[in-house]
Image 1 (cartoon, rainbow, N blue to C red):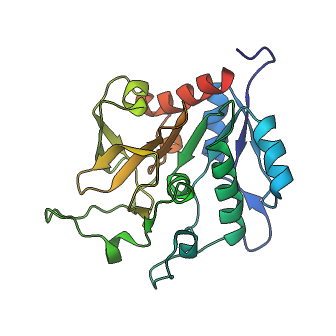
Image 2 (image 1 turned 90 degrees about the horizontal axis):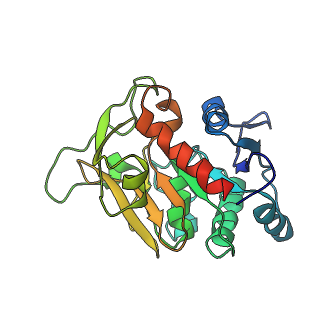
Length: 245
């Protein structure tokens, strides 16, 4: 066990056109409630910096944000693909690929864009736009995955697989009510990725990297739901507990 205060967790940033780094405040609020100290990473890190960073921090949270550059998973960009930040892709893919093989392992929690980057880092690919590219095999109606309601309102259910880390974390619940703010999604899972939750229309909503003891990606935004839904807060509490080890 760690013997020096609260764990310190790195959070990946977004950038704005005015050159400022930013991250949604609820990420920091919920991490602090879970008992960790969140720190925002800089965007430009070289290989030596990456090596130092993965050794310094006790855990890593990959936050939501813009789309992943399709060339990172071997595709050309379609019209429906949205805003990209190539430097952020470079940072997060490098971090994931180092964390996948780091010994001893560090806990990872990936949210929305985070699960997509995690999958690409493992060799998987994405739907660049669900509406344009996804059609369920069974003919079911595709859900609205980019909700207009506020983030604290859940809008659709996901089914959680029982033989997963996520299932144990949320107290053995096989059904979760979640919010939804994405138009891209995991298409083909990368090597080592285990699907842990899906929506009723078949979209992958959560995955776990089986090569690490705690590496979970969720497609929804639990940081906006945690205040009123204890099962969502448990995700951050489990992440914090893993960071303390």
